Length: 231
Ligand code: ADP
Ligand code: MG
Image (cartoon, rainbow, N blue to C red; front, side, top):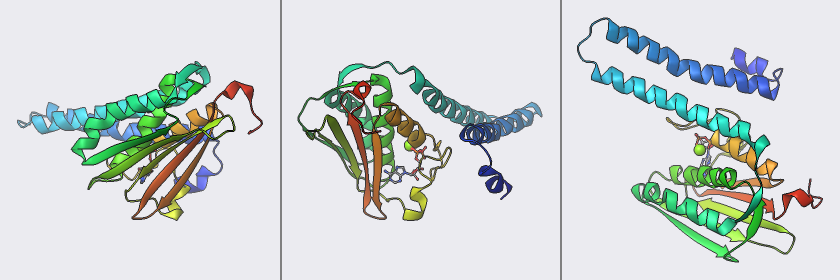
């Protein structure tokens, strides 16, 4: 494909811009087409309305994830209990989990860890990873959310699912803008999350086995501003 050949030459910003233009042009082209159809006097308009509103929703979700990507630069750091943030996100996602037959299990030790972070951005990270975990198990299963604090000024959060897993060959594509295997995916969640973690001077590791599941391990400094020599 022509796009692929040009890809290497483009800067990250250029790649993203090209991706955004492409991803947003598709739903807009569809919307335009259906508006024309409706204008031509067809009777059954309900279906067209539905398609148009689902395409508008798609544009909205792409834009809201992109806005998050633009925000890390203005991160507001203050002290928050990571266990509490995780607990809040689990509560938020519980109804979605139950509908998919998924049980979210938490294991926090210690049960409270105060970290300097941007609360909303880190919440977004947990939402993205836990949602991905739920979505990886269409037949249901368990998501384990684990919090640990080794004695090195850092904390470790693991999100483990029993889902489809990610083939080795596709691990590299994780976090590439607009890479998604889902019909309604944006392919932005992972990239945005990684960017936020980097902005918190943290690291991200993905371990996955096809058919068995995936673990996302996030390692964060308790006090990112102190720069404990991990960069
Ligand atoms: P989206 O969820 O909108 O597809 P993401 O950036 O969050 O976008 O994820 C990109 C892709 O990575 C997903 O479409 C999926 O193929 C894969 N992926 C991410 N997390 C998992 C997971 N826990 N298990 C299996 N595949 C995953
Ligand atoms: Mg996602």
